[in-house]
Image 1 (cartoon, one colour):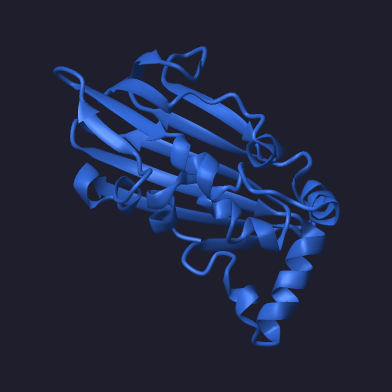
Image 2 (cartoon, helix red, strand yellow; image 1 turned 90 degrees about the vertical axis):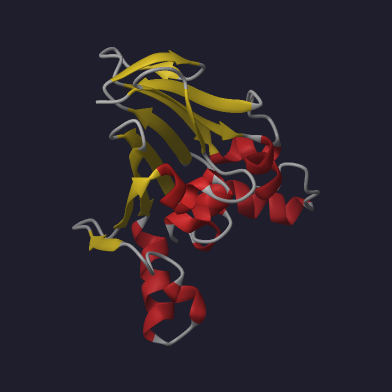
Length: 199
């Protein structure tokens, strides 16, 4: 799962790696200057599912290659696995800032950057409007119960946001339970945004 996938939608990772197993995901976009940012995608796959994915990879099945094909993989002591993908550069060069439903970076005044993630594409990609039969719904609920994606925007200071502001005002985040997204019950604004002061 790469940050290019994020360019289409922060939660698209659900459809790829997450459907092969129980995953929690954290997407952090840190403004590093008035024109640059660092994006980090962290995914954690549970031990039982990672064991199956690793077995698939050993047997040469394609599904085994989908988790952390382009990131830094850490196999944890409890059998779970953590994948970290990092990308850094100008807003125009970031793959997550390209394509429909991508992060949008705009100037909001001297030293200020407005970072926004449209949510319509997120809901469409994750299948919020898809019809599921009872068996499929039970399987989806088993996979995704208790798992979420966290979207975090940060910099020297967050001066305006519709997300949850951290006590130190250096970041803002939204935690989206996967089941709420899939069931279409997540209450999302048209976009998640933060106006961030660059360092």
